[in-house]
Length: 107
Length: 115
Image 1 (cartoon, rainbow over the protein chains, first blue to last red):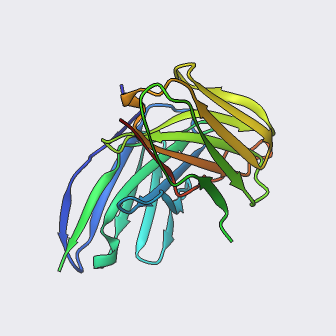
Image 2: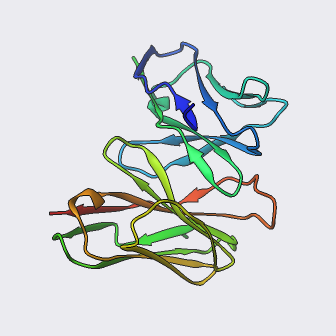
Image 3: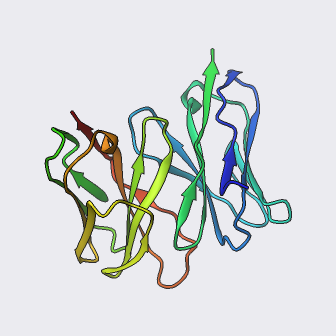
């Protein structure tokens, strides 16, 4: 099994829609989980940490399923500015990232 | 003020040359990393230092040598550059203090092109 599996997309979604993507991981000892956003030719920026009980930040909701070893990101009421690549990251002293899911919001 | 800064932002050089990339963070973090992002956008860890001590050394050719003079700086020296070294190199840092649950803060990257 790969360390991390993430659907590369692209996801082309109309403005205002809800979109969700997952990321599965193989290291069951992972303690930390994150979603990052990366714009073209820029560095990854933290979108949100993912907590065991799930957490929400505005239109974004992240969840962790330890039993099935995946994290998810839900974006509600998507905006044009949400267009980016979303990277999942997890691990401990070593943070491993997925290949990223490319999201394009269409007007 | 830039939190994690890398220099240079762009580096174009010929095969066989030796080059260095510098990274500095002013966040007071105790752990720093080098990641390589290739043309397929895969972000792969290379090295990590915690309080100047090397803690992660992935399967990186020994042409790559990191150096951490203090916990705010982590430099990367690359000898005998090859075409396959062309990529974007990101420095990152985090606060850990023994608990590995804090996020990484990335620098803005160094785009290395080897011709």
